[in-house]
Length: 425
Image 1 (cartoon, one colour):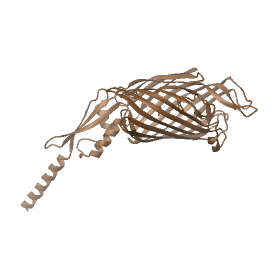
Image 2 (cartoon, rainbow, N blue to C red):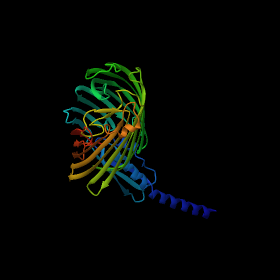
Image 3 (cartoon, rainbow, N blue to C red):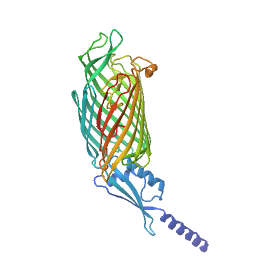
Image 4 (tube, rainbow, N blue to C red):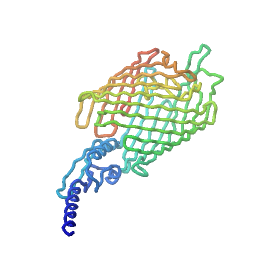
């Protein structure tokens, strides 16, 4: 009996020693300057006491590289003889206090810009804090805070306040059924609160509520007895966002697929701006072409309640969907947008990248109160090929200055420059 006990004891010691060699005894994070190591350790899956698993290590690296304050990440494994393994994560941080700007103009001499400042790693815990000023004939501003890990590694909160004022064209039909522009001073001010939940690093859900006021004041142009010249309406909005991101990020090169769904219910206190539903989904695809090329494409499908109103929710605009088309030149209750471009790296240094860009933007709209046949109407179809340049700083998050020139080839087309920070999509 004693010999049998000794045999099982030897087996136990052997198996325990073997398991110990496969066990992670220490996790070290190196390279951080601003980010709290304790915060990063809450986000990764690997921890001391667990078994070494390469799939979990790779998953952690993919997760870390998606964080806006991480430029690059990799891991190494140190074999501590007789004492398991030490896993070392090497982090290269981005500079995260970033100014941004969007500037856009067209051949019609429209000009507008938005400038601001954002900190993407406030307190070293992945909190985004930002503010902006916008000039689009009138002055606007907004502030936001986004803390995706406020309550746990999966649960966070976002709060935004905005006070936007622009000159908005409203398209009214005259006696000959020809649409003419009427200009309104438009103001939208309110607060939005969103709960943020991360199912995993590829799937994220946001859900929340917004309370705001829309104000329209007539400025100039034709009028219609059925369209008020003054509107001030209190509104509320429920929003659901689902984001699937399966993109591999390597500095300026991206590969993979992303789907972004935004669905909203908008309630109103005035029948002139009635309640409606609106949703759109962006499908984005990236593919590496050789060593220096990147093909990028986006398809946006949008649908809203088909109300016959001059204040329809989908707009045709330089800075949103079609480069060179002008600032808010049309409206609709449904939209199909396709953006495709080839990006080619011309210069790639330690910190600086110069990238060229050849693109085609196109789209069509359903008229308010119309039908899906409107998509094939030549008056609604816009196609804008163009070229551009990207000036990038590899060590600063989203430090991409872009300039694009779009030239319309469809009916009554315009052309123009669009400037901005960050890739167009």
